[in-house]
Amino acid sequence: MINMIFQCAIADESDAVKRLCMLSEFIMLRRFLDNIQALVRTVKLNQLGIEGSIEFVDAYGSNMHVSMGN
Image: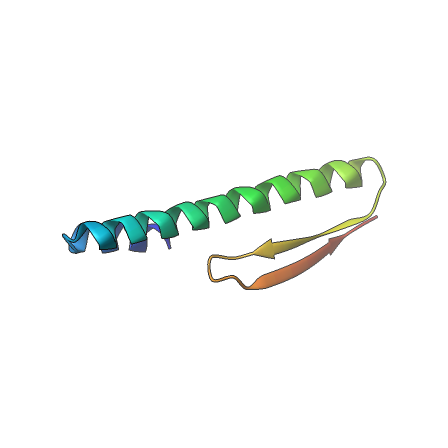
C-alpha cells in the first residue's frame, strides 16, 4: 500500500497531489505504528496472565477485532 502512494506521488507532478499522497502515507504509517503498539501492549498483558483484546485499523479504516487470552 505504501508503495502505491510513492508511485502516486512520483507519477503526478502536481504539488497538491504530492502533498495529498504524503498525507495519506503518514496516516497509514501512523495507523500501522498504533497497531504495533497495541499488539505489544496486549502481548505484555498476556505475559502477566491478563486477558486482553485489541482492535486493528487498516489503511482503509476497517476494524479487525482480535481477542487474546490464556
